[in-house]
Length: 236
Image (cartoon, rainbow, N blue to C red):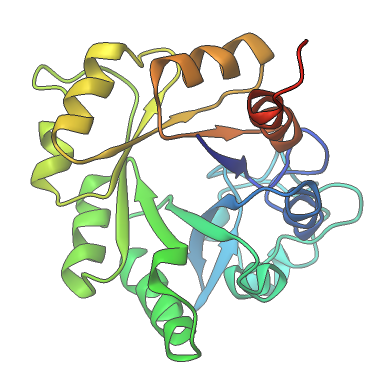
């Protein structure tokens, strides 16, 4: 079961900041997830479409200048980082799932990934996801080397068929809706199932028992500790 640090390790540090990404890496997360918006030619890493919850700013992200966004405190004195800064920090020590938050973001993200692939990053170290399936379809069309993940929060009538039609690598399902039937259907279609957001020890164990392929978690240490305990042959 793959451990994916949700917005870094946001249970320990301000979400989607370099401090949070660094904490996820320190804890040993093999993958991290971040959210991006395009602003004035930059890809800024922030989850909400508004600034109030995670920064000391206000208003919609895309209505602000990049220079204004960089003046804001994103928690504990951290700035809103760019995707390039996150990639520089990760430096191939982990895979990275980039979630597209706004229509028209696909081409920007593909260019950044292609630039990294040209500098010898492995294309399989990237996964691009979105609730907007038009966006990930655009990623696939622009560069079929880049894996895509389809985000959902519900149970489609035809289970994971939609993701198979997208030629997705994975389907990212909410913990509220994940079921053995959905997982089986996705696996039958050669799709990975990653579940968000899995934080409680009992939920971590339940996802493992269901056979999901990975979980997004605010606490990578909890998932990694669970996985380590499973592999420890000593009696408990």
